[in-house]
Length: 252
Figure: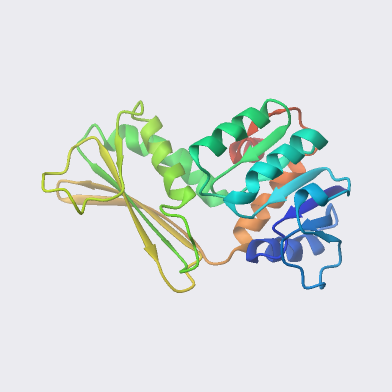
């Protein structure tokens, strides 16, 4: 049995994961962390991770960027592996993630779905063929109107996968409103849409002369991310210090 602390237990993803875990005999939530608690959870809920005194095999984090620093300190001190799913981290926080991973197991992924992580691999092969042939690369992501960061962490991960296949020679462009010039060849453009209840929609567009190839992924519910996070937590239990990702889970 894998024992989990759910960091951000009363958020939408926290509740989704709690529902999935309730139907899984191999894993259980032994404690939750959330600034707000309605008293309806079947496990104790603490206002901060520092206040949590329940032992666990791993933490699943779907919270906010502001809470990540404290979470990393807790995981290092308590030696509890962490599945870090919160996006919108600053460069300084990303450096702290790297530092923490030298002392405890940390699995960081911009997107926990199996489909997205397979797409990351496929894009590298496509890029090596299409970019040298003159195809321009654009990424369009769409999310619900409550999402606060843009572009999404998943969109950036898709861009990174493409750029790695190009020896990181391409520039990321997030705004062309002040430009009055022809599109440079070596750039990857990002566009973000926010509206309604869109769970997650990502398109990677390769636009060439007289043809367009689009790789698309659509999430119809948050359950796809929750299932991936649960598998990641099971995988991370007992793992030595290091920085892991969903590719490690898929290949295990």
